[in-house]
Amino acid sequence: MKHTPRGEAQLDALAAHLQTNRASILRQWREAAESDLELTTSSSLSRVQFHDHIPEVLDAFHRKLCAHQRSEIAEATEDQKESASGHGLQRWQQGYREREVMREWRHLHLCLVDELERYASDHPNLERSVLPAARRALAELCSDGVCESAGQYARLQRAEAAGRVRDLEFALAELSELGKRRAQAWHEAAHDLRGSFTVVKNVSKFLTDEDLSPTERARFAATLQRGVTSLHALLNDLLGLARLEAGQEQREVAPFDAAVLLEEICENMRHSAKERGLFFEAEGPPTLEVEGDRVKTHRLVQNLVINALKYTEHGGVRVTWERSPEVERWVLCVQDTGPGLRASGAPPIAYALAEATKQVQSLHAVAEKSEPSVSEDTHAPTLRSQSSYRPPADVPGEGIGLSIVKRLCELLDASLELETQSGKGTTFRVIFPSRLEGTSGAEGGGSASV
Image (cartoon, rainbow, N blue to C red; front, side, top):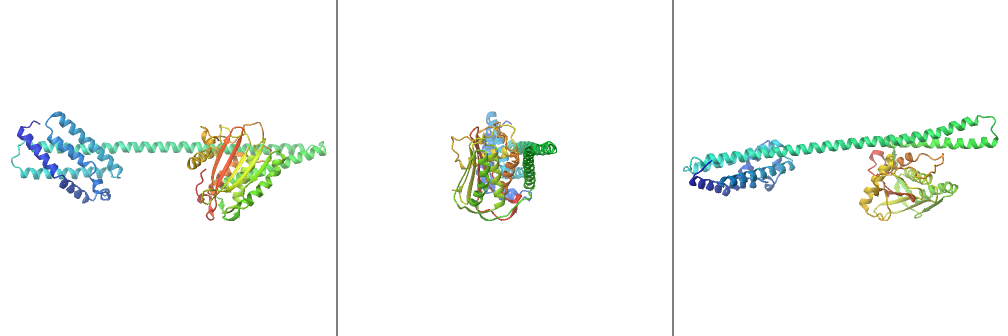
């Protein structure tokens, strides 16, 4: 719209008036918003937060009224849209509903209309083109504000919805992977059961042969006994794991001497190690008074030591314990000189331990850089030996034993770390609380770093 020089001067004067009275306009706008029952979020904002981006919008409106060249008008309009978009983003972050933002723009529009009408009433000699131009600029200001705010909300809602979809897809993929790993663990357990059962079945068949010599019969009877023992132990482990996963195990907390418990376990395991030609070392303070579940701690440690002996062909096993420098913690380490763990076809416990090691080592940052751990590998290790050695038939399956370790750690509020190096062995490190809270179910036992 073309204006005479006098009209342009009057538009400049109007813009200056609005600039001078800005504080009054903003106060009226806030009062109108506060009296609007549909605007609830604004009541929790400070004055500065409430006015966010609106002064910049009014600055752009001022420049537009004073702009008489096309380029100046275009620049002021772009500034207007940018400020309105920023206001919409800020309101989204402040928790506004979209309708609340629209009503705020409505109140601002009405406050500015009232100010224009008062100015027109006080200046009856305005040229006919001045007030229509100001009203048009105001309409563009508020329509741009509504459109940009609504557009910003739409973009943010789409982004939020896309993020939720990604989160759901990730959760479903994780759930599917967890199901596969759990199925693999139970498949391995079934394989171990079938192996033990086959031994029992075949040996039982041989024992029915009447031509067996007494020596052969005694040998087969001993083999049968070992097979039955293995089958019994594996079934007990499966039942124990099922109870742990179902949250049916409870912890019974009482004072006990962890050092005495560990010495007992190690003494019972020394004979098995000696028979295999392995060394077995145990080292730690003679007393270590703690409050926890003695029975479940015994199960946890025994599973770790059995697993260490099971896959160690040369060298031996070392068990150590100590009071942790951390407050109210004690630490158990079970270290073997076996073949280590390799990366392929990992059962669930391996993935869990890999994640545990990453989390715990990143928190404590105390692992020696020269000693590679499972967290340095891009793949989680399996719990299968790399050597040709096969464990004795009377030892339960490894995957089940370590799955029980994982669940017991969760139940006892213990964290578990795993370090392994191909051909050099594996170390399990369990960090127990010195004082465990009272009796509770497995689900209420707190979260372990496993």
